[in-house]
Image 1 (tube, rainbow, N blue to C red):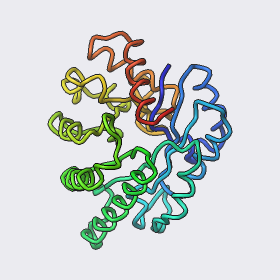
Image 2 (cartoon, rainbow, N blue to C red):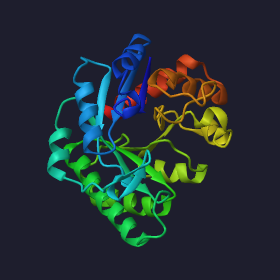
Image 3 (cartoon, rainbow, N blue to C red):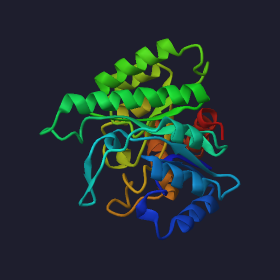
Image 4 (cartoon, one colour):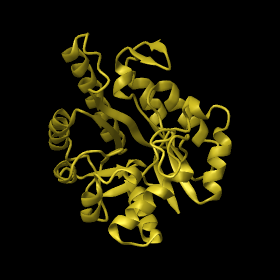
Length: 275
């Protein structure tokens, strides 16, 4: 079986067929974690997960790009203030297995505005959500784009401050859609943080060397659907069922059987998210 550790079937791209998409995956022995990016999509993730006895779980959180005003689908979206009480209430439901997607994203910052103020706001909201995860005993699903220096500094300080309540002998967070280099990966590993791969690795060889050397307990697979569609389906909408193509590419690179990679990544996901 597979566990797609990061999917967005709770997003508008699946408004017309979310249940069909989920059913296809479950029938093919592929489980999933539906990840929120704001309060609305976090609640939608939980609502969907609650309709299934097993195989569908939720993560709730405020994505860094939603802490600022952004343009999305041609419309101007207002910034969302992080409401600790609302997200804590969602996170206490049984089907919620992580706080995410949270983190830092400097790629989407409007350079015409107050860049430092936007970065500071992202950091503040990120740290608050890391604290929420730690206090609830949940792992964090972390997004990072063009912000790894600040990210590492925050995570090092946080791990030091919260070492007494973070999980022992298992990862307490995952860098989702990992796109960094080998040195960066090992810096995250040293902080007891795992990494996860998307369909990116099926059409770029940039991470082949890293994947060959990966410790078996440090990685998972995801789709990040509807984005990051793997070969041979690039250009089409992604969905959890296609996570097997990510696993297959890892199997080819590491010279392992697909079944072995499925087992490794499923075991790692079960341990981190307690599913």
